[in-house]
Length: 322
Image (cartoon, rainbow, N blue to C red; front, side, top):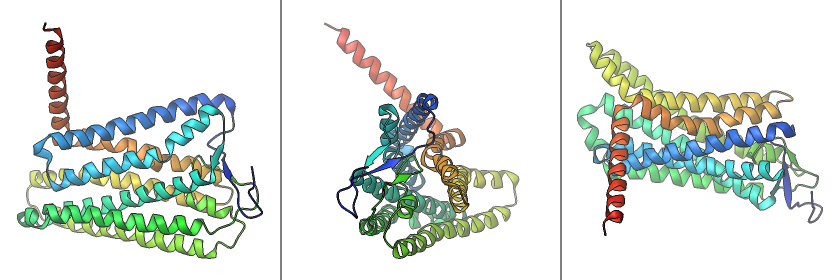
């Protein structure tokens, strides 16, 4: 660890998931595979929604944004981890660490808000179906995504700027595979009371607020579904929000597991392992959940692949012609 002066350092050490050299190739292969699946799966969702006019609805507009955010979130974390594993290095520069915190906080917050927005969309669709197209108009949909992005940017900028005020005067070894905000704050040698306070207040407001909105929306949705007389009607109403409910459950359960494990003593490694779930596994699972449980997405993907195959065949035929 190189020190610039008594209070500032130029790099941190990311201890990763394991120090066992024999496990490094396995970790590299596993995370590279999950990262590629995440990017490819979410990219296919975005392309299917973009090219299929049947999916140009508020629900799929929000889903495309969620897929984009998932790609960005994992890309802010996993590539650096893969580089370190491949190079057998644990170093991340001070600037790189702050940047990783900034972007991971931004996209994690945006992801959280989008899940709440999607819950509101399902609430309007099921509880107010006759007014759905009027309420969920393109202007409101764009505004909801924009406001979610602005709030996430402001929170990320606040957390990052406050982190820059801290001093790190000893060798900093972060027991994690990426620069996680709470872990970095713990290793500061200056007073972190303000940082801790802002972190926990923002967590309560920016995570608790969307979660409360999701719970309220689904309480109304369940109430409306129970009021439907026919079993077929209940199934049809529930099926429209089953995929989103699955994603929400996976996301919040994994995040809750991370913070419960980090609150326990001697839990740094357990927290790092638990973080794999919401940083890698959840974004990877989202495309599978939506494509397997959603007939519209499956049909759109089939049409997209058929169109790509036809275009590819046409290109080959043109090249063969003299």
